[in-house]
Structures are given as C-alpha cells and as structure tokens.
Image 1 (cartoon, rainbow, N blue to C red):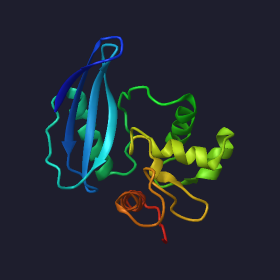
Image 2 (cartoon, rainbow, N blue to C red):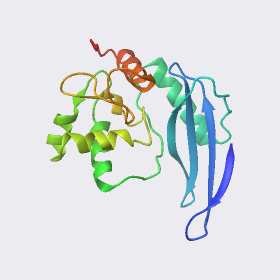
Image 3 (cartoon, rainbow, N blue to C red):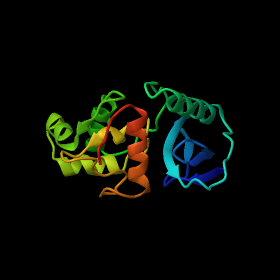
Length: 176
C-alpha cells in the first residue's frame, strides 16, 4: 500500500506499508521518506486474518528479513533506520528499553529509577512505542507480574498473549 500526503509545510510525504505473516499474527511495516532517507516509521501488530502485502521497497524487504531472523533466533540484533519520533522523555525510555537483552527483563520501576522518572510514565512511553520488537517493550514487566502491553493492562487479551509469546520465545518464564 503506497500513499502520498502533504505535511503542514506542503512537502510530499511518501509512505509505503507492507503486511507480513509472523508467528504472532500479521505485522505491518510502514516505511517513509524522511529528509531524502527511507526509514521505518512504524511496525504494528495486526489481526491474523489481514491479507499480506509484499514489501515494495528495499527497506521494507530488509525489515521483513530482520523480523523473520528474530522469529528464528530471539537473540538477533536489529539494524534498521528508524524515523525519529516521540518526545525527548519517550526517547529516553525507549533507549533504556533497547539496552535490555533478549532473554532478560526489567520492571517499569527499575527503568524509572534508572532514568529518574516514575513507573507510570515509563509504562505510558512503552504503550506508544512505534517500533515493537525493535524496541522491545515486551521485556518490561510490572513488579508483580506481566504488566501491560500496548496500553492494554490486566492479565488477558490478545496483546498480552503476544507479550507472553515473545517472552517465552526469548526463554523468559512467566508464571501468570
């Protein structure tokens, strides 16, 4: 799916989206031309029944390959150009999350303490992550268990099932 919109300063914004299959359902990969550089502008979890759309550019194809590599090997390290987004605070949180290795977890509270913030603020930044898997918010847990995922709290729901699957894939044992 290719599209062109105009930004507030009337410059064209070129975006393409592909949809790939994965063990956790469909993944949407959106690429965007930013200052003459093609970047990933979003990775999103989609419902399993959505029709796949083959990647139409080299970056989308590379993202597909890297995501497949992660599903084959949870210790795979992503190397994709990501569109700069989010507030300075969100970027501090996402940077800290990016340092959590596969197979390891951290609590919202521990991350908050490390960046001198509050647990709820860290959870909020996790919930608006544009690059799940690449910025592995699924590795952040509450002090008392699984915590939320993608702004969904509680212990049931599709998004939390994805979080459980990803943690299990990385060898993390969750007893909830």
